[in-house]
Length: 239
Ligand SMILES: NC(=O)c1ccc[n+]([C@@H]2O[C@H](COP(=O)([O-])OP(=O)(O)OC[C@H]3O[C@@H](n4cnc5c(N)ncnc54)[C@H](OP(=O)(O)O)[C@@H]3O)[C@@H](O)[C@H]2O)c1
Image (cartoon, rainbow, N blue to C red; front, side):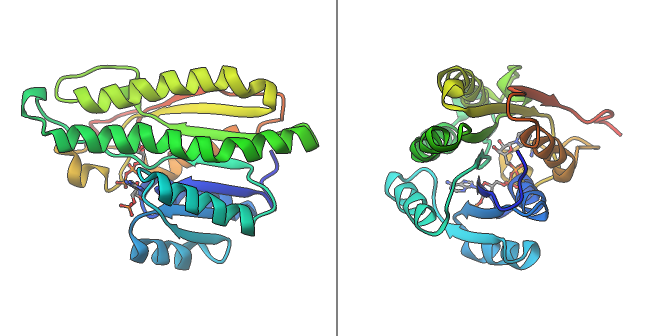
């Protein structure tokens, strides 16, 4: 896809990987609707990315807020070409110590939020396919924790393994509608994720721009070329 003059929605665009992807999309001429809860961080993102970044305050776990956000985007944008389901978080620890709140917030953000945003985007993408023969591209941000289980990561593992299943199912469901679905599995990235995750970051993580560069590469692939899964890791995580 040539990203110039296209419309993208990036969830979790106020920080970390989502902000890096928003920047790279805007650099290629796409208008980016950036969803997140923190208004001030979104305003900073707008100042950093420029006028192609449109801040949208939205909690992706809230059905009504997601519906409102996508209705607003449909009004002000002629198309919806790219959806990056990036917003997510981890709460790590022994399973018998994990609070119900920590379980629920991971399930609700990492899975329910993806479901709500994807469900809101699909009708538009299907209609675009009917008009032009190409629907759009959905990129789901999972994690290596979507492929490998580890101690103290149980709930997060469950959400990211779940996201892998959702992505593979959806990929097969909507390819005939001209919609690409890609699921990515990054290892550790230097972001705010580890401020609240409950484990330290590895000594030598990837940068958000590293991971974003591959996301952009995958989106820019020719229409009939779908990269459905990508795993990324730092070469020397311990430095
Ligand atoms: N960092 C890593 O090592 C790593 C590795 C593999 C995969 N990942 C995945 O990468 C994705 C991005 O994480 P990150 O590392 O960039 O973390 P981050 O720096 O903590 O950013 C998370 C983003 O998600 C947003 N967010 C969280 N809950 C939300 C909600 N309910 N509604 C809307 N937005 C919400 C946050 O914005 P607000 O707080 O403003 O809402 C923020 O913009 C996540 O899915 C994570 O699981 C991260």
